[in-house]
Picture: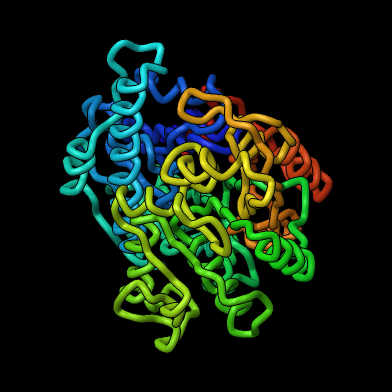
Length: 465
C-alpha cells in the first residue's frame, strides 16, 4: 500500500483547509474549506477543483467553521456524491454555517447587481441554499472516541479538539499489507482554560501529524480587564456604541458570558446588548442539545435565546428589517454581529454606518486573516471598502486577544508534548508564514522532523506498507 497527500489549502495560509489523501486506490479529502482574506486567495474558490471530484471516495470534516467546510457545496456542484463524515454537533452547526454562507452570497450578489459595483454584469454566488440542501443526505455522523469504518482498511476516530462545539482532532488508522499506520490531523485546537469548552484531548501516538499553527508565533495573554472596562465605560460616557464583529459559533457565546459577568457585577452600566446574528441565535440553542460537549450547567441554559440569563439586557434580531432599525440607536448599545473577520454578513452594514463616528468603538475579539477587513482595521487603515464604497474609519479600533478560540503558541506546544515519541513526520499547516515558521522551528529544536508544505504540493507519506 502507498499513501500520498496533496495540500489543496491551509498550507502557508490559515484558510481553505483541504488535504487530499491517496491511499492506494481510495481517495479521502480531509476538510473542505473556503479560502478567505486576500483577493488572490478568494479567487481560488471559483477555480475548478484541482482533482476529479468523482474519484473522491469520502470527505472528513474536523469542524464547522467556513474555512473548513465552506467549499463543500461547490464540491457537490462539481459532481461529488460520496459520504461526509463528522461529529453530530458539527453536522448541525455545519448546516447553519453553509445555509448562512449561501444566503449571504446570494444577497451580496443581488446587492452588487442592484448597486452596479461588481465588475460582472450578472454577479452570481458561489453556491445557493438549494445547493446546500443537496448535501444533507450524504452526512454521516459519529461522536467522540467512537471509531468509524471509512473503508475496509481505514478507520477514523474523532477526539475533542476544544475549538468550537463538536470540533475534532481526527485520527486515521490505516491497515496496510504488512503494517498499520496512524495519521493525525489536529484540526483547529482550542484553549486549555476556555470558559465553555473542555480542553483538547491529548493524543499520544502518530506516525504522521498535521498540526495547525494559527498562533504558532505568539502567546495570547489575557487582555487586561481594566483596559477593556475603561474602553467600554468611556465609550458609553461619550454616548457611543460598541460594535463587536464575532464568529457566530463559539465566540459569540463566550462574549455573552463575558458581558453577563460585567453587567452582573455592575462593572459597566446596564446597556443594551443587541445580537444581530440569526446563525448565532440558532447555534446557541445547540448548547442545550449537546450538553456533554461543554461545561455549561442547566442554570446557564434556556429553551429560548435568553442564553445565560441575559434576558433583561439582550435583544435578539432576526429579520433584515429589524437589523436596519438598529441604525436608529444612537448610544449605549453593544452590537454583536457576524462575520468575525468582517468578510460579509450583517456586521458590514453596522460598520458602514458606525465607522465614520469617532464616538464608536470596534472591538475585535478574534483572529483576523491577512487581507480581511478586520486585518485592515488592525493595520490602522483610514478607510475600509464596504459595498463598493470607501468608508472613513473614525471609530476607535481595539483588539481583545484573550477570547480567541485558537490555542496559542504555549498551548500548541503543550498539546504536542502529549506525544510519547516524535511522529516520523510533522506537517505544520493552517498558519501564515510567520506563525508557521515559528512553530516549525520550535518543533525542530525538540528534535522532531517538521516541515511547512506549500499550496498544491504533493508528498509521498508511505510506500509498500
